[in-house]
Length: 391
Image (tube, rainbow, N blue to C red; front, side):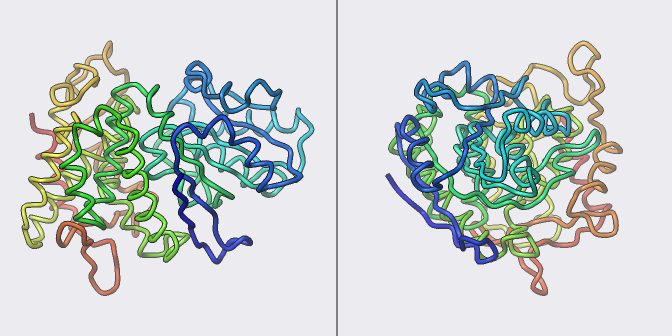
């Protein structure tokens, strides 16, 4: 096993461990009870994890109070689910001597963390991420939240976990589309912080796609070190932590506009292409990074254009996302006006317009006047989004 310490001075404990291993799930409840003693346990997971047997593996036959989110995924990431979890905790007569355990992907982790943050004014949360996106990104850093009816992650708070346990063996049961989509976050980390890691991804793509556990352990280690370093410097996203949003500004707009028919990682892949196009439009140095990023994303089977969705991706619905029929994706509105309107609702917007994380070179984010997110004129963004919509 590999262990990384995240140092967050603002938390009472001063930080938390990230433990990376293979086949460690079955012993985690006992470890949590040893390291966070005298706490009642409450597990939040979803139906896909329960069906895959991960919940049973974690509990080992013990009767542990839990809440199973149904259906799994972004569709359930709203206040209704949060309220149901909190009511379930109340029904089990749980108090402030509780630790919430989030077993699952990004949706489970975000909601479990939010529930822990507000239950009895705050109890500890432990994350056990089981997807590529959660193991790379969302389980680390303390972001929690739910979606509104109009935008993604509109409501939430920072609530740093007491610990994170990554078992790469849980990725074996992840479906192919989810597995590949989550790897976009690994590409993002490499692009913003570590060109050597980017080369590792390029050189080990076949092993990654066949889910080699040794390689996945290395990938998890790179991701956690990069994310931990950024979080330590800026725990509550005042400035530097914004670099973790590379590809996410346009990506979140696309995700919302697709009515979450597109997965988060698929949209981040499109968003990274948007960022590359913005970099070129702003005259930032071209070191061939956009071609390398696009090449890696395509090898992962991820979309690189909105207009190409249904043609590029593995497992992506074969639909025309630009002009979908009502039978294909009800209420989906993937057009330039709607996407630009969603950008104005970005939670990081200033004056109703977002700032964009851009690269100066592979492994280095562009920083101007001490700011890690750049102002980009709306007409430039509109031109880029229009290009992304083309088939």
